[in-house]
Amino acid sequence: MIITYYCAVTMIIIAYLLGSIPSAVWIGKRYYGIDIREHGSKNAGTTNMLRVLGKRAALPVFAIDFIKGFVAVTIISLMKYDENISQAWLINLKIIATAAVVLGHIFPVFANFKGGKGVATLVGAVTGINPEITLLCFGIWFIVFMVSHYVSLASMTAGCCFPILVGIFSGSAYKRFGDTSVSFIIFSIVVALLLLWTHRKNIERLKNGTESKIYLWKPRRKSGDDKTTK
Image (cartoon, rainbow, N blue to C red):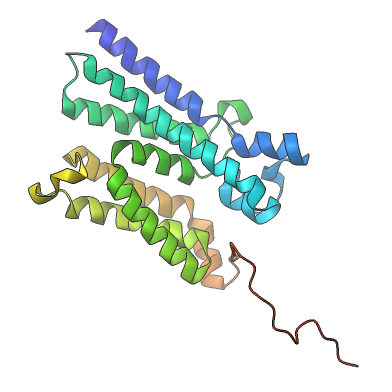
């Protein structure tokens, strides 16, 4: 049993260290010569990278942040071979690992404890727990983003839909959507509240109409826009 505790604690620490990999900070400094935390929204995440440095900088940041969340949860699955770990506790450990990797992203030990909001890392971790519901949330995020062009609004909407979808698919008729234990339902509610809290400044900017829009493709200019009047 002692070995079980040791392994569990070690994996949680690894999850935090994975989350602490400051991809946006390192890529910004290595390839663009800037600290992304000093520009734009001063957030070390995908959205600010996209806003300040463009898609070529943002895509690898999202990929790394997603992967580190996914890996942090996936390695917990190795605990299923421990006879002292029940299925319920396996889910609980995955939730704890998710909290650890997200906290690592927000407070990275490798970047003076000043990181990002952890959305991409959270998505990766939740994908490791329940990929089907995560895919549905991504669909909601994509629709809201394409309509509004606000990443923050899309993230908050998808986050708030997360516990709703977990509740819907918690019935026995939807067991194919994976484990939806009580702890996972509570976790989904906490995630929604956390996303609203971390986006509180974005909410203010949305209210004031000062939130920046992001376009994956630049809107086409009308033919007369480039003409100057004499």
